Image 1 (spheres, rainbow, N blue to C red):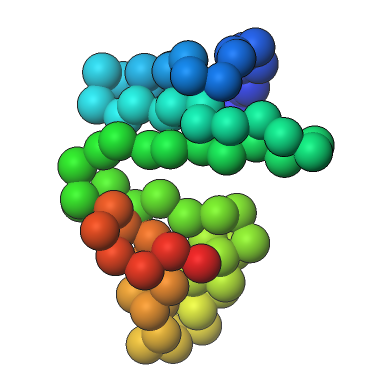
Image 2 (tube, rainbow, N blue to C red; image 1 turned 120 degrees about the vertical axis):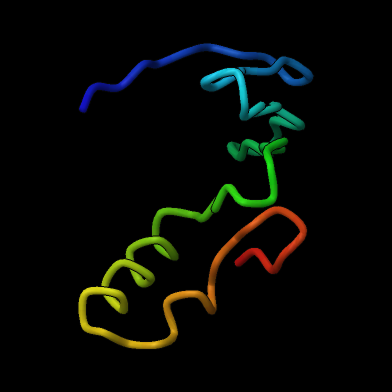
Length: 76
């Protein structure tokens, strides 16, 4: 898997696969706020949450869907 590195300013967007839009909402104090526009079926999670979900799925735990960051659902 490769990595594409892009430079964007606040207010600019990136389109992924013609279906997901990532918008740079704000850059302040060393933090970047991103907005995501995608179908509700697309799970969007912070990396640390996805790692927990992946571990739970491998171990057979039923809590895997608990932290799903689907648009319109709870994000952590």
